[in-house]
Image (cartoon, rainbow, N blue to C red; front, top):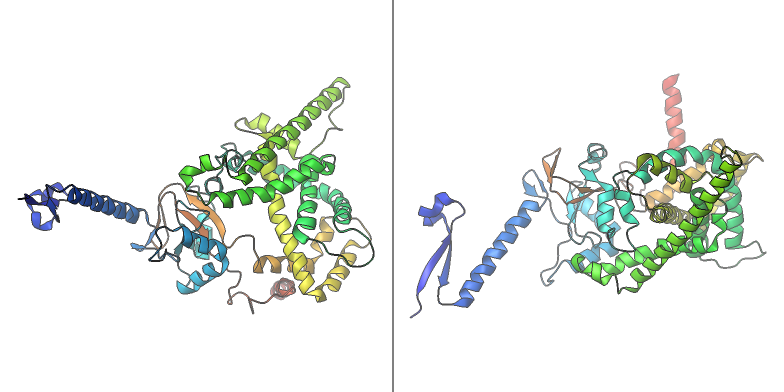
Amino acid sequence: MTLTSRLYIPWHSANLSTPSTALIFPVSLGSPIAALATTFVLIFLAAVVSATSKTPTTEGKPIPLLNPKRWFELSTARARRRYDTDSWNMTLKGMDKYHGEPFRVLTGELDGTEAVVLPPRYAEELKNDERLSFTALKKKSLNGTLPGFQTFGTLDQDNRIIQMVTQQELTRSLPRLTAALSSECAAALENAVGHGAGWHDVVVRGGVSLPLVARLNTLVFMGRDSCYDREWIDIVVGFTVNIMLANMALRAYPRWLRPLASHFVPQCRLLRAQERRARDIIDEKLAARRSLREQETNLGGGGESLPSDALDWFQSRHQRLGGEYNPALTQLMLSFAATHTTADLLTQVILDLAVHRDLVEPLRREVVEALDGKPIDKVATQKMKLLDSVMKETQRLKPMQIAFMEREVLEDVTLAGNIKLRRGTATMIMPRLRDPTLYEKPDEYDGYRFYRLRQQAAKEKESTYY
């Protein structure tokens, strides 16, 4: 006869003498299967309790999950993939379903956690909160610790050298670079599109936007000589595309397996090769600049003939700040961030104008009048109000991201409304780009939308003043 007993697991020591309040399991002490089953149940309950404690909550209740896995799915992989392929529409549906209140989403980019989508009213509360980090999120979600992906790790350096150079030296230098960028843009556009008579096909993003933007960015970041370096431009364009493809390829593997998988995935191998070649090119350019600086010093010069670009700004900043700095990875990060976003916007603006051809002639007239036969400068660009409106309308309907202010929670945070965010949670702010309370006919393209809003605001200001 098998000896049968009853096992109870008390949550607190005070319950040891109170079996009626304990968790009761019938266990056959002679059955290994029963013991194993009990172990599974305990593990399951521990996992449930742990998961529940980590789930973000609002007013003590778990924040609802927009895209849970279906009953027949063993993992969340398909749920994440469904969101990645239709994230814009699903996010809009979530905003409507939960009436603008927070909700959670499973995404392929954040396969180890969830993202909490917050209403716009939390933007002000979160924007300067150091307990949430954009750079930490990107380093994790884009595999910034893996070879070939360490470009993204440069964002999370303690000395914040990239942020400081872009906010200060780069911003101050843009006005003096406007004319050079304009002339270089004309030459790059002619190379990309040609100037022959008649119509011919072009690939907008790969054939025009990416190489043109990469060339102009290189002019700012590494000087005029480098923007004619075909190999460097090819690396910038290729790296911008391949790093996204490699990240998507790695999503097929669990995070713990990615360090190994990255050595075999073709896109990852290509990425490492591009990074190695980028290091060689940057090292050569830095060596040439050191030689030029020594010659300038020996001749008694004050450095007037030396280049002034991002390569030089980073070197100077690093000498003052110390800390981590890898010239090649920093240049790749800078080029990726600027090229990826700008090329996407330029491509979409071109496509929108191809559809809405009635805007082309008014835009041409505005540009001609703003320039007035003179080289382009900051004053001229401020006069191009219709062009500004067209670009904003493109960004409104087709933004680079489905949400804004992406962050990783570095420590437990409680927001207004008793919203509790656990450490490791990702957050983002809902867009209001198609909010009917803000925009008339929000789903329709209107190139004059922001032009009219600007005029209306000016009239209201003028009437208030008088």
